[in-house]
Length: 312
Image 1: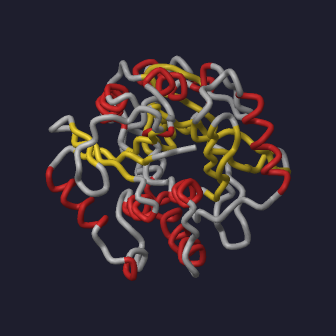
Image 2: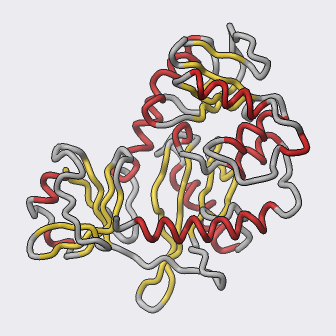
Image 3: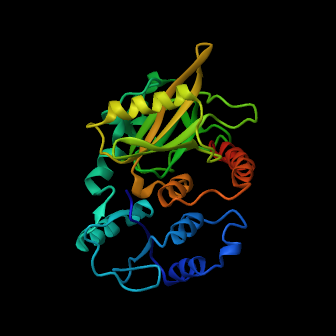
C-alpha cells in the first residue's frame, strides 16, 4: 500500500536530528512523547521504510544515508509542511515514484468545501469582505479560518469590530485582506465521560477508511454508528475527491440531540504531526504496552491547551 514515508528537511540541523532519531537504540525508542514527526520516523525506521528529502541539496537518501537515484514502482507518502509540498512532489516525480497524492490532489482537497456541503454550513469569502461586513447575516460569533491553513479562531463582533473571543484583541491585521477564508457557525463538540472531544481523524486510502482514531488521543474508533457514518461519507466522496485524503469528523450538540458532520478534509502530504496511528498501521508496528493510556492523558492536556488558545 505504502512503500516509504519521505520526510522533508530544509536545514542541516534538521537532517542531523533525523539521523539522531534513526540511530536511537530499540530500548529507548518510545520512552517519551516525541517531538514533531519523531514517532513516525521511529515507526518507519522499524520497518526500514524511511526516506529523507534534503530540499537544499535537492537529494533523497535512504535510512542508511545513501542517495536514492530511482523510485520507480515505489509508492511514497511525503511527510512535510505546506511550504515544502511543491519541492518534494517534484523530486519524487523526477525519480519516478508513485505519490500517494500529487499537487493537483493537494489543491482539490484544500478546496474541499466548494464541492462538499456540511450540515452546519460554511461560507467562503475573503478576509477583507468578512471584515467589511458583507456576511453579517452569519451572526456576531463565528469560527473563522484561512483556506490555506495559517489562521483559525473563534471570533466575535463587538461594537462593529471583529475580535478574538477570549482576549478581545482585534483580528483586522492578522490576515491579509485578499486571503480566502471559511466562515462557519460555532458548534459545541460533544465530549465523552473524560472530557475528551468526540472528534476523529480518519485516513482514506484508495477510497477506503484505513485508520479511524480519536483526534486527541489516537485511540481507535470503536462505535459502530460513527464508523458507519465515516464509511458512508468516504463512499459518497469517491470520484469527487482524490482517492487518498485525511477526513476529520465530529459529533456536536444540535437541537437537543447530536449530529455528525465533517470538520474538514486535509491533503495527506501536509496533515501535520497527527499520523501516528496511520504510521503504526501502515508499517505493522504495534503500539507498545501503555501507549494509549499515556496518549489519552496527553491528548486531554493538548486539547485543553488548544481550547485555551483558540480565541487567542
